[in-house]
Length: 609
Image (cartoon, rainbow, N blue to C red; front, side):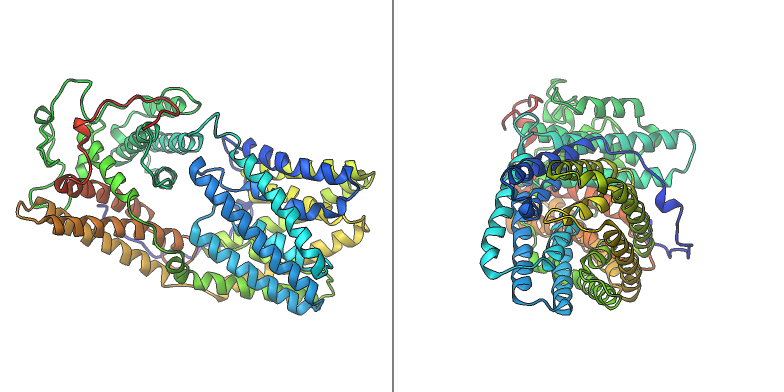
């Protein structure tokens, strides 16, 4: 285990120019961009043909769900998209009913703030990735200020549901062609990041940034691979081995081969054969388990004489066991440990929401105050101030400040773009729909480089949507949007400063300690020949549950800010060591078949178990 501990963060100036620096675009930037266009275009064009373009905001609410879950395996994506659509419909229903019952702006702002807080907390607890709660908050907040009657609500919800169903089909459309595309991309990113870390180490540089990025990429790859809890296919098992090879490179970056890591990463993309890293069962070399030096219980020495995978004292698996690129036995052990972790039932949603109470309070406070200030300044529809405040909250105060800067700059440039586009959009319904589609594409294509660049297209998109029921004076829309943006950013940032959760760091430390103790206990039990099956099972389940809890706690803490940095490297190393300890307990208990006795895998895309 690493001895690194969180250190006190230095007081730094809040960045301005650095927050606007452009990064490299995502390798698959075009996928969400094309998906949202494919989801928005048919419903909008159909309504235009029917002469009911005023109903397009409701179909667009469902269509925007196509932005979600592009990093999830398709089995998990189907469920996530379904829940996102249901969440969108729930928020939209509350907003439409509220708008039907009252026109009191203060009441509507309060309802919108409470919805935003719930959406933020639930998205964080379920780890729904970008755009997370922001789209849901935008949909529900905008609907609050659209005149409604109770009789219209069912029809509007039906339109949103139909468009959401179409968005689900769009999101799942690539599955038959690339059934393991998301897993392959996550694995390739982990290998690329490990190669970059190895190159930095070979150059004699400290490379703290490259090492941190590599650990984050490996952690993200494990999350992608483990999110599907059924029996893994042969393809996923092969990808898991590649992620372990990335972990090996991180353990000893100076000894890793960056060229081979990058070669593997290139080979993983597409639909071709997944490269072999060496079969952990040594079947290709014709070695038996005895020749491997591995005893029937899964323990023993490595044939290269480098030492055991677990110390005889059983206190901890040797962390040096992953420091050789050719250590296939401990790679196999970690694969078994990964399988054990996958078998653990996730914590209930309500238990994950508890630590997020400060996040919900901060969101509610920032959104409601931003809405009230906007109303006090004379805004008729203050939802943009509310959405701006809701979009700011990031992992720490520095990132929250950066997001505020990005939001303000992007929106100010975006209103200028809207002023230029508005005359074209007002030429007719078709021109308006085409401008909306172009802004949708541009927002998703650019937001990966920097949030402010994507906001340049999001702002005119939101303003063009308000034009669907009827064209409005461009000057009034631009002025109102600028004021609401500044109000939302300022008030939202002040709320982030005022409401903190300083216990989040202690929660991570406590979870790390729990994993360490559970791992030591499990290793001792597995090493004791007199251990009973009940004791082995209790130790195994206790350690697996502790690992799952560590990941959930670390993810929740990443949404907070405190005086100490999140020990991300320690979290990944603790998970890695726990996987190997789980392997020893699983084999000792005989709960999983020994990989050395099974038939050889064929690593081809889409192969069945």
